[in-house]
Length: 281
Image (cartoon, rainbow, N blue to C red):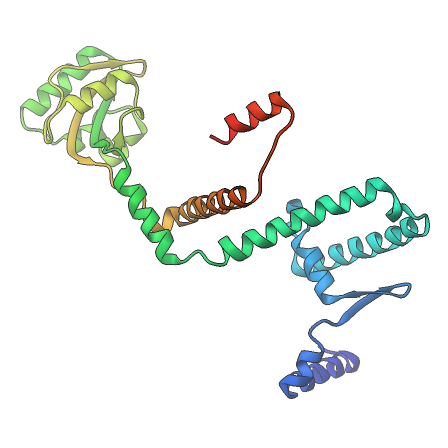
């Protein structure tokens, strides 16, 4: 049950939330802590939370806030000590800050001209292009019965020749875990099965079974091909993030090409120039 102080806080919070929007906007970047005369705002905390180590992702939201605040306070404390010692005036510090500033400008430009402008239509169009360019790959849907000896496999084939149901025989005689599913292995493409099994399965016509046992490292197989098809492409929703990355990569390269047209890039070191040119082909 809430005590009086907690109830007062909740009531006050509800009252503030009911005020006019102008009042609420004034509080959007509240001060959450002070380190000497330096204020830590909610926006500082939000930024710190976004930069937390991925290993802390399992923490609760409140634990993340505390971890971020602790890190922000530690940073402010030692930053003040470093400033007192004039470490911000060293050539090393200034060079480092220049590099960090350029990286942030690079990221801001990339966000403005790539991340923020990619449209769903562009991503969908790129998906359709990639799908159209995919090589066609055949798949088979097969069942099999796995036994230890060649004679057992021949007996299974004799039962099939006599008209017995493949799935029923698989449940009765197969030693493979797929026996509970009537030997069903689902659809698979080339490269998924051991070579002997794959060769036999892809050689069969739809609706037929092997007339001789197929030997592999696992034993002897009798294989039945239920269906053949061209492998369907992955659904758009399944690969949308990867396709978006492709679109952004191409837009990024276009930005770089345009920038290189405007600004000459000269690499003085011949070995580095050769390596750079090779990497950027």
